[in-house]
Image (cartoon, rainbow, N blue to C red):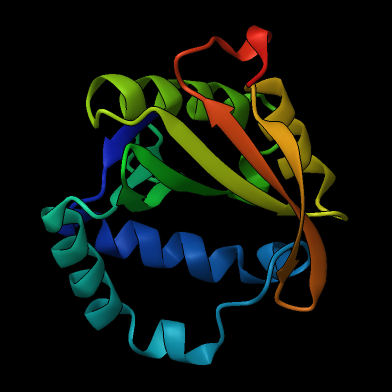
Length: 168
């Protein structure tokens, strides 16, 4: 059974493999990270871990029993009891309910471990999978129109004091 783990330095090789192997898959629904992301991966990871240590962000990876990264689930811009949720799943890990289950688990962690009360998210209008995960986990559209790279998107919010079935 895959496990959600807080990002650590020893995740680096598996995380880089995850990003490389799924780059084209991700670029079909979210803006591409660009070549510099891969060239400067080690420095970027070091910076992320330093930012996580301050409490401004909480980075997580979904890891299979063999140590393979199946997904990333991040809470960023933590302030005043809220944060932005971002996530991405490996192509081979999609259509198994893992993203939905992991976002639900992360919502619980956000409330109980990180003291958050509200999560925000955004998804491109053509990213049906992410929009489905968000609505299944209690996020509701805000009506806010967002631009994600070259794609139009929509904003979502989740009140963590309510269950996913209650809406926000």
